[in-house]
Image 1 (spheres, helix red, strand yellow):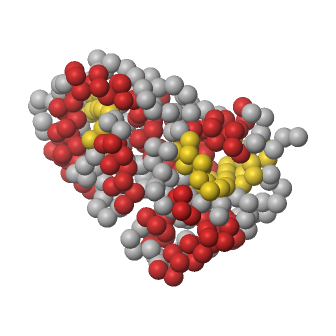
Image 2 (cartoon, rainbow, N blue to C red):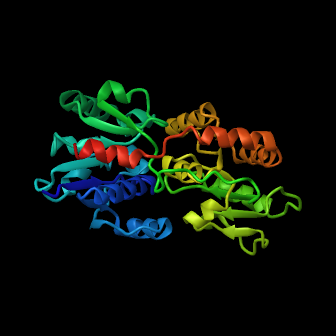
Image 3 (cartoon, rainbow, N blue to C red):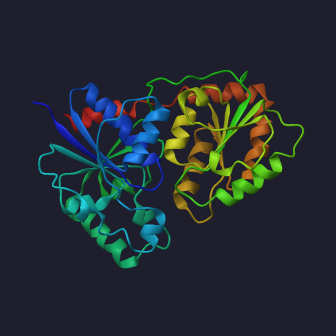
Length: 331
């Protein structure tokens, strides 16, 4: 009998929805029937750029952005879900409260909001820890990014990265293109806008083209600045990605062989940890300032030995997380 699986996305940024789209594709290939609970506009945007067909979608915005959590608006998101009793499995991406209505639900993600945000409501943090202790849920996390505390609160299953392709395309750095992107989940747009404005005045850069997140492109940019499309074709042409290190953005870049150079807002422990992880695995350079990221990216573009070492390190990564997750969910 066909298993029905509900996939519930956190609405902070696009990385959570992206991961569930990839998981939905793998579930369909194995004969399951997934329904993705996420904002329809985000699903439409992502499936178009990813070049995949959208699964069945229930238009649902959890209203669980960073600001929602910190301003204490997010704690009752689960009350607005429809009845989930018909689903054989429920998977909740980073949202613990699902356990209050589906104690058997799986969690998915690399961190937990109440452990990550410094200014999270103290009482609610304690409540969420009690929920986790009571239900001890199963949780799937990419081993590349798993926060150390997940094994304390959940029955943790670690898998590879969630990539559309099961194998990476590690291209040579003959395509000297760079991506600069902020993502949708943080507060680094001003930092990036100011840097890009200065960048347009530079006359000597080591890259042929600079793909820029459309949200931060200045008026009348030079011809070598191109609006980023975030398609597979764009990522295939990029050798360096200067990005806020969200899991989705990192995975897209690494799965096509790019090296990562980070910048991010201060006080975000998830971003800090992701930057450290990139350093640890030898697939990028973790910094918080975009100027520093640019400097190291330029050095990398000129260094053949660094490029060869990067290719070796990329080849050691597991990009089969969606398939491994399906094996767990449908067992």
